[in-house]
Amino acid sequence: MKGPYKLLIFPSFILLLFLIAYPLAFSLYYSFFFWNLAVSHEPLGFVGLDNYVTVLSDPRVGKATMITLILAVVATSIELALGLGIAVLLDRDFRGVGLFRALLVMPTAIAPVVAGLIFRYMFYQGIGMGFFPWFLHTIGIGTPERGILGDSSTALFGVMLSMIWRWTPFFAITTLAGLKSVPVELLDAAKVDGASGYTLFRYIKLPYARKVMLIVFIIAFMMHFNTYDEVYAMTRGGPGDATTTLSYLLYREGLIYYNIGVASAMTWLIAIILLIAVNLYFKVTFKGEEI
Amino acid sequence: MKRDTMINIIAAVLLIIITVVFLFPIYWTFQLSVKPPQLCLTNPPTFFFQPTLDHYVYVFIDPGRNAMNLVSGIIESSVATLLAFFLGYPASYAFSRFNFKGRASLMFWYLSLLLTPPVIFTIPHYMLMTTLNLRGTYASVIILFQTFAIPLSIWLMKSFIDGIPREIDEAALLDGSGWGRLLFTIILPLAAPGVAVSMAFTFIFCWNNLIFPLIMTEGPTKPLSLATFEYFTVTGATWNYIGVCAFVTTIPPLILFLILRRYIVRGLTFGAVKA
Image: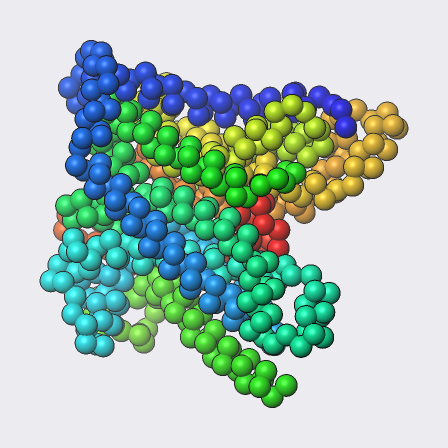
């Protein structure tokens, strides 16, 4: 069809362009200046690539990158595995399975920041005790003196657990949708040929679900890479830097320390990592496909 | 057949256990919101007690410290969703119907915004909105929500409009209908269920967002989820009120998820996976 597509797209496009291009241009420009709002309202001078050098040589940036990657890789892998297991159970056909499908997805609906608050309460250890430390003590596992979120060796695990809780059901229902996408005729034909439950799953259903699982894995991986809300709610990046993700580091550098120049350089480094990841997502999701 | 029944029983038992584990934190938040204060953090935990509505009264009615936050959150998310509809619906129609140069790249550009960490946009917008004196207004949050609300609603609505036969458009155009009439009085009623689903998901994404309200809102314009943090003070946390705010914040998305059951997979994968 032919039609006034420019006119129809233009309003949303122009607003988005402003909302996106303005910050990126701002960051690019001021990444070459020394500018700390705590020191002055105006940039204090052109510093060339100094901010980039600062960012790349700052051990905290390296550490935050590591923490972010560990969080993303470990949590997303666990979610994928657990989600597949639950999807296999949900894929069975018995009365009431629909109820489980509807109920299990609930954690996915919850705001990440609220999930963080809930888990902060459950992890609490101090004057009184939250559910998790009580549970662990009861089954004979000790917790650090300052609590799981208060100890730098366990805090990341705590943040991860709240993410696993929220994301596993998401993997489960999307994987289930993949398993269910096998055409009925194909399943029937395989059954006539005498394929057993495991063979059906391994050689027919799983290959069909693979693409969905891959798409979902990448979406989840990037959302984990962007983790901010849970950290804000649970630990504020601490103790020390133990749970400081890249997103949180950038926020802290810019809006708490007011280091606009350095934060701007960091913005661009994150944007470049992201560009690579997004391209990968498109390659996988839309390979040779009409959209 | 018998073996199958056995497996189903085992699956059902496992699912009951898994469901209980995954819903427990939600239940635990609810019980916190109706628990007497001295029982919040007992060792061992108190499972049975006389529930009370005092905390709800305190938070929303008397003195109702956070009643306005609840209203603000609803206003911000609803208006942002409506704006995303008005800006996004024509675009989603164009992406669905017209083949033009750069269409795929433009759609990818919209989609990439959904995967971008929002924090990279915050500092410049924070400074701009401060200069314009817009911080602490609904408008600032509603505008910033558009960074993800527009792309999300466009991708979701497009996936539904794709399902409407093009013959309808062609027939209407042959009958001399203009584009405005075609979009809003012919296609929109047909796409209404899909548009409603898309808007519901857009609303949930706005409602669950933290970072934009965090940098833009103050006092009464804070949404409820953000206002919750006022109950953490140097002398400790008032867990009951935190429980009330957290639980009430989860209610709208939970209800929408129950209603939208069939579309959850599509909504959360931005239309990429149609269950």
